Length: 348
Image (cartoon, rainbow, N blue to C red; front, top):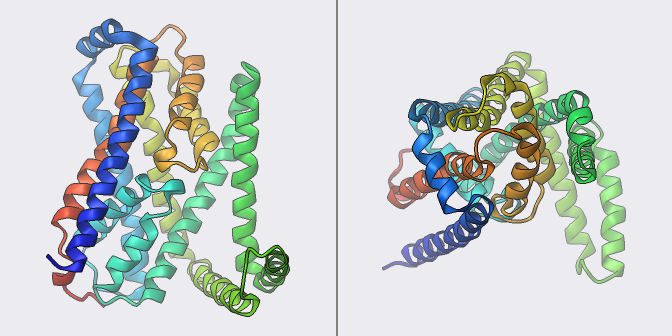
C-alpha cells in the first residue's frame, strides 16, 4: 500500500470515528428528551411522503450549492468542467465541512481536487472565495431579516434566546463587514493586520514577523483581486446570489417539512423557517464538527417555542439531523472512498 493509500485510510478511519462519536452523543440526547415509547409511536405515525419531500428539498439545496460552484468555475476560469464533476466537488466539500471544526475542511479539499484536474490553485482558490462571499452576503441579509421579523417572538420568550440571536447576529455582520473591507479597502486591512502581527510577535505567538507580513499582504491581495471579479460581472453576481438564496431557503425549509411529516399543522411555515434560521445564526460558529451539541440544544429551544403542542421535538430533531447532516456524510464518504484522484481528466 502506498503512502497516499495509507493517508487516505487513516483519514477515512478518523472521519468514521468522528461521525460515530457525534452520532452517539446525538442519539443519546434524543433518547433522553422523548424516551423510547414516544419515539416509536411518532415514527410509526410519520407521513412518508412528507419525509421524502424533506429529503428531496435538502438535495435541491445541495444541487443549488453545486451549481454555484459550477457556474463560477466555467465562467470565471473558462474551465470545461462537466456538471457531474461540480456535483462531486460539492459532495466531497460538504463531507469535509461536516467532519471538521468550524467547517474548515471542505474548501481546501475542493481546491486540492480541482488542482489535480489541471485547474490552477490560484483559480480554484478564487472560486472558493467567491462562493464564500456570495454565501455570506445571502446569510447576512437573511439573518437581518430574521432578526427584524422574529426577534419579538423568539427573543422575548426566554433570556437565552435573545442573547443567542444577538451574538450570532453580531458575528455574522462582523464577518460580512470584514469581507467587504478586505475587498474595497485592502490596504487599510493589511495595515491593521501588520499591527496585529507586531503585537503577536511581542507576545511570542508569531516568530518571524517579516514572513508573516509578506504572507498577509499576499493573502489580502489575492482575496481582494478575486472578489472584485464577481462584482465587475453583474450577471454572474446575480446568478450566484440567486442560486445561493435558493440553496439557503431550501435548507431552512427542511425542518418545517419534517415537523409536518410528524403531524404538525401546515400554518406554521413562517415561524418554522425563522426558527431554523435562528438555529443557524446561533450555532454557526461553534468550534465542533457539525456544530454538534449546540445545534441540538438550539433546535430544541427554538422549535419548542413554535411547536408547543406539535410532534415530538426530539424525533423531529433526529430526522432533521439525519437528513441534513448524516445523509450527506454517508453519501460523501461513499463518493470519497471511490474517488480516484489520479485518474481524472484535465478540464483546464
